[in-house]
Length: 357
Ligand SMILES: Cc1cc2nc3c(=O)[nH]c(=O)nc-3n(C[C@H](O)[C@H](O)[C@H](O)COP(=O)(O)OP(=O)(O)OC[C@H]3O[C@@H](n4cnc5c(N)ncnc54)[C@H](O)[C@@H]3O)c2cc1C
Image 1: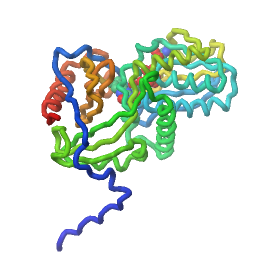
Image 2 (image 1 turned 90 degrees about the vertical axis):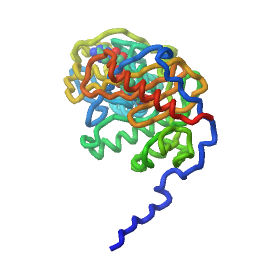
Image 3 (image 1 turned 45 degrees about the vertical axis):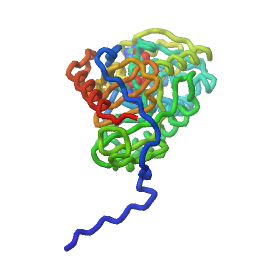
Image 4 (image 1 turned 30 degrees about the vertical axis):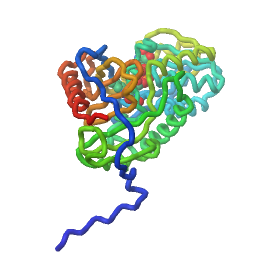
């Protein structure tokens, strides 16, 4: 019997139309040992079942837990903050305590201020010392949960948070906040298919697929899409300034337990402590996924992101970031030299293999 041919997919599902060439030039990244300016390490606050946004009563306080964003906390921050503030609105208060000053705490604090609250941030570390400062950050809620552990209700919640957050970030584009649109090139051995199942694929506009020979990258296939790109050092400093400008107060303080929140003057506490919530709340599902980035001298002429297998390159104004490590369950903040060598060599070979012009 002759093989049955698959039905052609309807055009709405065929993804980006093939294009002949990107029609632009790409400056290659100069991956050289003596252009490295630092290597940084951060721990993604990962929960297999996804982020937590949940309210509870603790003694005299309402506590809203808001943590566990894995590898997508910058991307999701405004969206999950919106969800957390919706929960807070059920407990009207004139003042709020936000615990934590990363991307999640800052977005939460600003949304509470926009609703007229007097907000105090209590945090052990402030930018630039947070995990959020390590993030790249490409706008993509990636490695936020494990498929096997997600419920349909959670999936709907994450999609809502992603859509809300994407819209909030669009209002922050420009030099002031360090947020901009950027082209991404996903470079693969075979044509990509999996992105079609992504329920938020429409948030990555300007798609195009390039066949072998039609693009300068050293893999047979490449797919283009655009994302928002958040320069975290610029962005977090700007949001922190906004917070202070709108009357916010900051107290540098480490909490050893949730009981200590009972003594705070604010009646509602929003817990945005990221990985810190594991010890504070006994949430053993929270686990670190260690990530490491090599930072090269800036190259302003590099104006695109590359994604190739596990490797990625983000061109920030303070340096070119080379990433591609995910060590689940690893708490060490020491540089992993083996991973560093692998990421450096992988990118060196990738950019050396790029066609000029
Ligand atoms: C290498 C790397 C690359 C990444 N790339 C991206 C990316 O491209 N896009 C993206 O969206 N995300 C990315 N992420 C993920 C992102 O960094 C996290 O999801 C995000 O930073 C989580 O934000 P947060 O505010 O919850 O946590 P944090 O930034 O860690 O902030 C937590 C805050 O809580 C405070 N705190 C904790 N415990 C206590 C305590 N006991 N008492 C008082 N204060 C406490 C801390 O001091 C800090 O102020 C990346 C992460 C890494 C490591």
